[in-house]
Image (cartoon, rainbow, N blue to C red):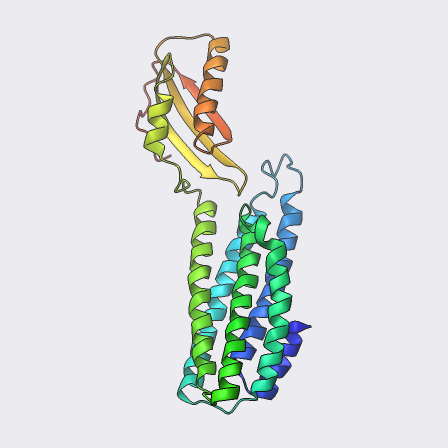
Length: 275
């Protein structure tokens, strides 16, 4: 309802900022729908043909939402430049009241999603959509007040441009984060060299090599690697050492570990090996 009201109000009042806010609100609805569907898929059980299940669904949703933010922002920039160069008379009262309604609606939604947005990239993408729309609605309200009391109508285009630039900034940040996960890049907060040094301190372990570290989703960070041993140990001894390795890597935020034990195997001993 808020989106429809803003869209109609934007056309009636002539406010591009209000129309841009309505367009962003529409993208919020689509974003929430995508996030909701992704959350449902992510909880589906794994199978023989889908051994990871749909755990990547939320990351894909976050990436789609981030790209949509950027696309909307680019469209708004072109429209804002035209409006900035050719200001139009705007019914400020409509802009003010509809922006207040949008602030209340988006503010409640932002508060609901705030806590969960810290730990889930999919929810964060929806949260950012709503938060940027809240900021946009506040900017539209300020613009409406300026137009009503000072008749400075070019502020409408200027505010739209500011909203668009902010959308691009948050959209790029979210897109890069979700892209890194989709590309299996090592999380930036994990220091691979420090991890190797700590694992190599474990008794009977010679060195860890051929390492891959990636995020499956927001909750799972995986490590797979080869570990050389100084002697030909028993399987029971390996189990004990594996527990120590898991304790070390867990301190780096890794919660899924797959280790291939080796003894005098003539393979590539580099830390990173291109498969």
